[in-house]
Image (cartoon, rainbow, N blue to C red; front, side):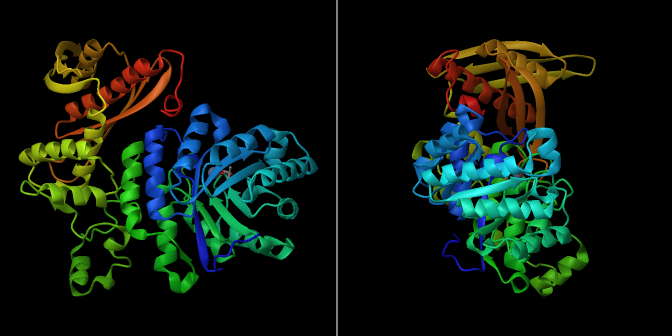
Length: 523
Ligand code: KIV
Ligand code: ZN
């Protein structure tokens, strides 16, 4: 049941919110997921896999909310081959005008014997039953034989054939453990094309993991052999070494269009802003040399390259920075920039702030411009993240004083303001300035946290760049992530820690202990 799109069109199925979010350290709150879903819609992905509704009440709620926002793309939810999972996906996605149920079951010998303990025929029966049930609920059903790349070819063809007969409209071939190589994956897709009778009635899809660093190459090999949907994530985030990176696959198809003869519907100028949004939210920043969205992706430092670039950009540049949404000069604003320029730039960066948030962020921008001559995109993003955390109280950081000594404990004194503007101060010792400041915050807020991870990232360039801190902490057996930024890295750490403390206090206030909210389940 292939759709009406031309055969040169590659559908982009984004699974940042499902396979990406499943990766350790990449979990997002409901609000963050909504922001990402909206950015994906602006990027013009075809399908958003919004989550795995049976995984937790939080997953269910977030898929449902995303579906009900009707951002535009097809909203999809993942289900195992059982009625309860399928029913949950249906309940979660049905609010979206266009929705899809994605069912999967593992098919490789390793999974059959060690995980499922099921015979080949039982697996086919389970897949057919699930697809049939899903088709009774929705028109758009996708099926994935998990670990397809390690499944016997003849058996895989049998499974795919049965899935098509049962009514799947998209058949996805996952390289679940990132094991295949391009030439082998090309053979697998051609084999299916040759041996599955009704293969041209469905959209063939590809889903690759990056364990051997070949997720993008394998996805492109599949596309070259007939796949017409790529499953991928922003920045390639995902389990272990991640998934196929959306921005790399899309730009390869666009830049090498004379080779592939294919296209996507992606607005490539939204790639960079979306990448920054996802890395700011997850705290997982792509390496500087990451293709397409890394900070060095368009930097030509070597003298010989710079000389060539000045003669003609095409000597060393195969894509233009503006094609991926990177402004030619990343230097954006300064002390004299006005509110309009500020607002325009934050909209270009993919943020949607209301007037109150814009004013607050603009005030912070002015304060930063007094401390720092050049304000880059990274600085603006850091300001916005801080401003949105600060607007959600109850506590805001008023002042911080730290002292460190080479052979004595560090000391910190903090003053916080509550929602009524009242001050509360306390001080503490610690092994270092961060520990001392965190203990002082714990004393003022009454929220105790165990610090598990502290990551520092430079928001822009130069020695006056803001430090962006992402902390992972534990409270009452749950893991939380918080972010903060400042030109002072201890202050950035405090802001990150305070963001989490505020969230915990707000939840306690709104839901009371023992009443988990949707957001709580997806911290
Ligand atoms: O990697 C995988 O096999 C998956 C499937 C559920 C599609 O994520
Ligand atoms: Zn996967």
